[in-house]
Length: 380
Image (tube, rainbow, N blue to C red; front, top):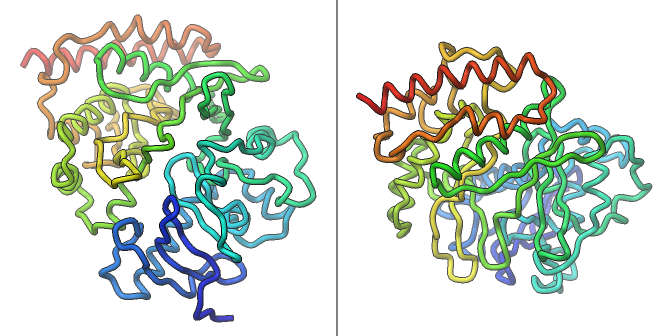
């Protein structure tokens, strides 16, 4: 069935941004029309077909990753072809930005529906995290929830802290070494010593499993826009210069330094997962002004994660070059590291409870070699 009129309205706060319709399987956009160019997440200068394809990609990126094992479980339980079918029922609400998707009779309001000011059902997140819990018979019983719009391959869920009036993201580790929560904590402690702006991560234990916990980056006034979305919207070159120049053009003070700190961070911790959904900009949602780079976040796939510890192996990068070593050539490291923190002491603190002692020793030796390499750079 082809649609020539709207089924849904993409909204930003209470602004109508675009009208669209989607096929019954929620796999393909069949009608798309931009209403507000400023907040539309795709390039409105493209033709209608290109806009529809681009928006379909944006909508898919908004969903939980298909690499999460729980996705097939959900699709089989509720007999759906695409996970977007559940997301649309939950209005596409997120704790990353202020977009959402209204449907007939189109009478919802941001104030009444957003997840920053209104409590959400945490059962769904718990189910995504713990596969031993049973799914309810009808997914509409879960209510609105941010977990279906939280990307990444690791299992995770959101939990609201009533006392602090803020949501926290709780994230587990992968089956091989369960190293990621410790990596997040290590990166936080290191970046704190370097005085780099970053998102704090802490280590905790839930049901005999170590997890990382971080506060929600976005709030009722500010939202995250990923670098992938900036390519989609502005058609910028996928490069260091393309990204930095756009940030500076948009009035972000000190933007290049913020990006450079991220590059230095990724080299120091051997982060192989800084793809263009794992960095971006913070934007004031009320006036649209860009505030700067999102404080460095999502550092779990680091410290030779899932691999042998070897500083001679090229540290792959997904941001501005093929390797973190090549990315570092874009930066004067001496400008950002005045005094190298005691990385071994930081590691010992972060990995104190890590119980794979053989792996821990290997990581510690790897960091020793990393320190030697950094000191050579700083002395040159």
